[in-house]
Image 1 (spheres, rainbow, N blue to C red):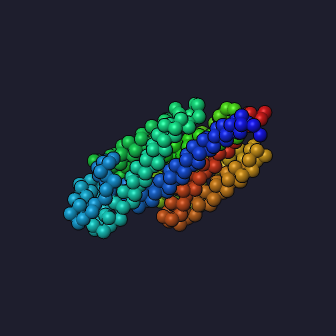
Image 2: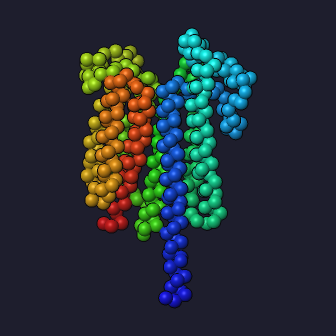
Length: 353
């Protein structure tokens, strides 16, 4: 083998290894985002989200270190409506406060960790000129979205510090949906880079079927966020009927159907549990379309939505058991990941066509 041939081989290996290295990094960040979604679910279910009443992006990483610091944080919490109207009259102790503070602090700490885990490797890849053409802007956009997510998190928390005893369910929905969008974008970009490393000439495209699958899944995720924000999971602990009715009683249509659709706990719960079957139908169609191209992605989609349906039913029937509820949110994120993978496989078929 000539020196020129060896040199060309080195170039080919380098051109393949760099996209794969970046893809593996993005998958690692996606894993951190997945963990963040789980901790966010725990934070919500334990009513921990309002325990830290200030936004300190740098110094907030340091938790209270002594009794005086803890008492100071507790006093700040005592000034907000949640304590005055709910947890204070219920007899919250400093120990109880430390518990909810812990989960909110971990949630914010993970956000900072994700920021560092994304920004520093991105800088390193950029300095080494290892980012393939066309991906610099995409990766920068992901970084900006991560920063925006932190700001939206505080925007959400701030809605529950002055007049309400809880955060706005609209803001919670924006916060959760952006987290899941970032998760999906990380996976899509990583899949594109692995495709590039294996000879794909263009990034995968979003097909019409892929668009509708994602749009229908988005509706389900939106109502899942509403259910969480409105505590709507507690309005019925029976399935398939809701309190002995298919369409539950108690829906407040006083402000109109549109307002009820976005604000009434009975109606949002009803939509969330039955729109799920529309999602299942679309995911089955997607999985069938891609099974010859990626059997693994097809299996992942079927497994994710199957487990998610069972967890949703079990969560309702156990009266919102916290372990099952957290698992329901976690597997919901896996449904997003598997769906994005499947839609990417579908959009990658154009090169071979």
